[in-house]
Image (cartoon, rainbow, N blue to C red; front, side, top):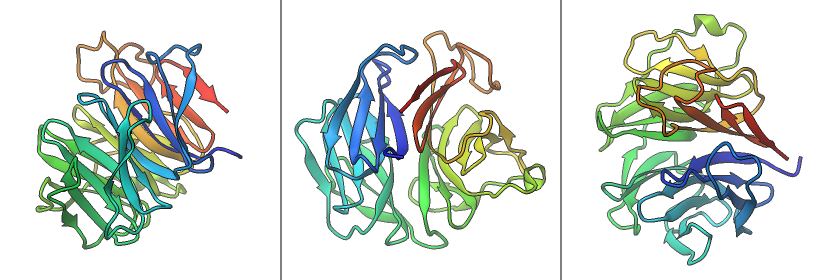
Length: 272
């Protein structure tokens, strides 16, 4: 149990994946397209207890939350040119997501029980959510609807708001199909009209995001300690990626767990 993989992200152009490992205090990447098991794994950040990570595919930057040093940092994609973006009035920064078009970085702080945002250089920082929030583990942006989504692993819910933090809503879920399953939602991402969330100990679920009493549909099988989730698509994807497991060539689900980063739908596994 030397690894504890928490979050995963990918580069939109070259398809490389990046993941953070708390126990090893590293961020690593595989430097070729998804699906090539023979590519080289490269450690790019060391001695940093990284949690949330975000890849800026336009400016070729990597952002991450360092919980040991209570800071949010940025580097080049190869780990060079490390900068501290924020290190004031932070306690336990965890999740990060970015809006590259408008240069906004959204982050959660478990110590201060907040969700905040700032510009890529750390300026224009302000708090979005500071009520009825405790441990916001996953953050995701729906830029088409201009809404922010988050999971709260302590309060057992998924919520959304406008990008300025107003109009907070609870995502309505019918939990009757999850009898005897502990609902501890962790990672979250969006694609098309669906949310994709990880539930600790039971796997990754697809949930219709704008439907009352939406029924969660498990799409990853059972994987203990599934954390960060990211959705990407193959070059052949020309439709809304809302199909279930097995639809090779339409979408790829990346999710991080204690000892693995897994690619769902193309059935390729990387394990340590």
